[in-house]
Image 1 (tube, helix red, strand yellow):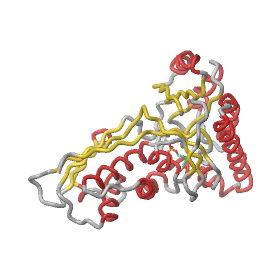
Image 2: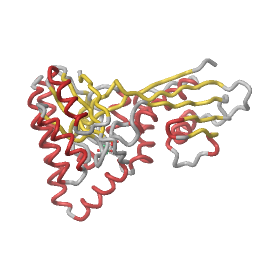
Image 3: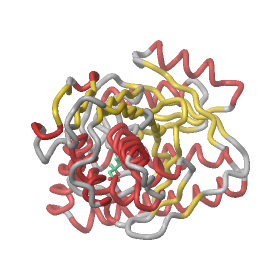
Image 4: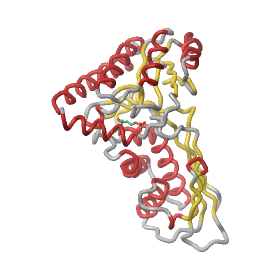
Length: 313
Ligand code: PMV
């Protein structure tokens, strides 16, 4: 059996994070500059069923059998085997690498899962269809997020902009005019699970106030969809700014994120907001293509650890 590999992109949430967990729509796009990769090499000498997992960036180098059920890399392999009804596959080594920052709101967990599900199923001769990849990646998201909405596995599996509502079939988004996004990293790692859990306990204490904020965020996502499909990209700027304010209200922003958002707005971005789970991780700024360099410089000057430019189309 030859070596097999698969990769999956990063993602950015343009509108609707957190509210999407409570049934509101959200918009997410793939980020092709970032990727997770899974490479499988057959281990000819080893006994069938032996599976080694190497993920140097997260310090994993172990036999599958020694990893706990809660380990998301092991879970991706085990789910693939059980979905295919295979208990003793030909021995192989799975190596995982990724350029997506971990705990940065850019979908690293879901991208790694999607890459593993695709690589292992292809190696075993039964490549999963996208629908199955997304459904299984969702199961693994539960280990990362607790109560995920499903947006990450969806946008990353289909690698196309999506308008997403929890538990509904995927709706792809037609981007009438491409637009430029800057993605800037605060350098603060922030696990999504904690932010999602904190929002849940705050919502339990003040359900009416939180439901009202989630509805407002949902309305923004709906307006943004209309603007994107009409090619009215400039209209997205104020919607992003407003979405950021609402995320501040539910306490998922941070001083580092606010600092980058303000710097982008002051440097002439059309709009800016945190992206993903928040508290740290990344923010996004929508810019006129001509201003990308200037806004990027402004972000680096106030302390961004990295700025990625991506064109959404
Ligand atoms: O932090 P990320 O990139 O995994 O994004 C999470 C988005 C949330 O809405 C906060 C959670 C979810 O499952 O939708």
